[in-house]
Every structure is written in structure tokens, then in C-alpha cells.
Picture 1 (cartoon, helix red, strand yellow):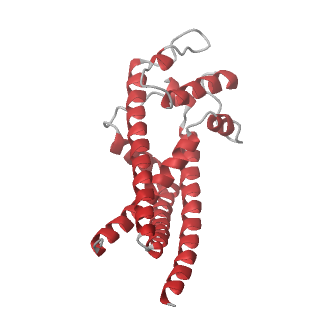
Picture 2 (cartoon, one colour):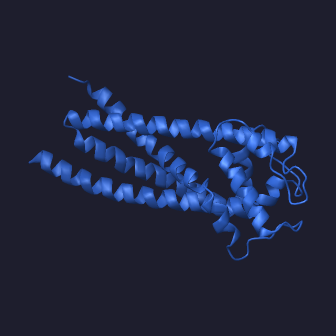
Picture 3 (cartoon, one colour):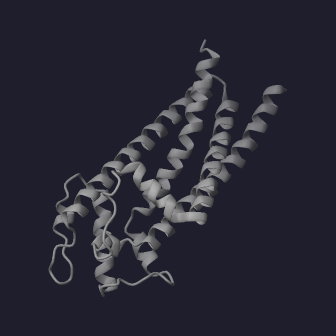
Length: 229
């Protein structure tokens, strides 16, 4: 018979997996070609300060995002050119994009591993007749995610610049992610794009967490009620 501490460990595995899985699901949803096309058309989104057309800007942005979802080689970015024929990215930008891809792949792998482990944990608990523990873990995971994302959302509203800086310094070497306003990465992905992406991820994860919290709480109450009868 499986010890109660093992059951508790399985429940905690599900609980802590929820914020990571939900967040990376939303992040990956935004790292698709539709996002720059949508955000570039939003009212108030700035035009390229150096006169690049919206068509060329969108083409380069989509190719850059595509790089995150392709094999490791940076050939795709190295071959990109601006409308005047110059290379789109300099060496510092290419190195940073390699760093971005490394972080992106690592977090994606972590989220996928946690998803698989939490599914396995849920199945084991269900086989042991611990359905209530599964629903409780999902409920608490939704609550944890909601708490984290609401806190981060408030931070972003109060001071997005400080949040943006700390986020980058957490994952990248300080200074390696800072570029000139004339660099292509800044021209394609200005701060307004990151603000929109941040609020979409925070809002989307908060909504999904609330749904999971309410659904998990409801199913847990019914499960506990049936178990007590």
C-alpha cells in the first residue's frame, strides 16, 4: 500500500505543475505568426521610426518568431535582410536570439515534463481511489497560479519597466539584452509589443486559473461528499 507521504507528493506535483504549464501554454500561443500581425494593427501601436513598411516589418517579425519554433541553426536569422539589402541582424542580436531560444526551449521542455508527470500522478491517484486528491490539487494549483499572476499583473501595471528589466536579468546575462533603438529587434519588437504580450499572458493564465480553481473546488466538494456517505 502506497504511503500517505507518497500520495501527498503526487498531489503536490500536480499543484506546482499548474502555473508552469498554463504559463508556457499561453507563451507558446503568442509565439506564433498571428501575434505580430494582430498587435501591429492595434490602435496606437507605433510605426517603425526609421520608415520600414508594415509589410516588411511583419515579414521580418514572423520570420524571427519562426526561428523559435525551428531547429537550432540561426541560418534563418542570418539570411534575413532589410528592404535596403542590409543584413537585418547584427552579431549581438543573433547571439541574444540564440539565448532566447535556449531559454524558450528549456522552459518548454520543463512545462512538457511537468505536464506528463502531473498526468501520471493524477492517474496513479485515481487508480488508488484518491480522486478527491486530484481535484484538490487542481483547485489549489489554480489558486496558486491566480495568486502569482495577479501579483505579477499588478507589478506590470505599477511599473512595467522594472518588471521587464528583472525578467530579462533573471534569464539573460545583464546588458546582453539591451539594444539601440536603431537595431532591428527593437524596431520589430518595441516595448509596446511586450506590454501587450505580458498582459495577455497574465490575463489568459489568470482566467484559466480561475476556471480551474472553481471547477476543481466544485468537483472536490462533490467527491468529498460522496466519499463521506
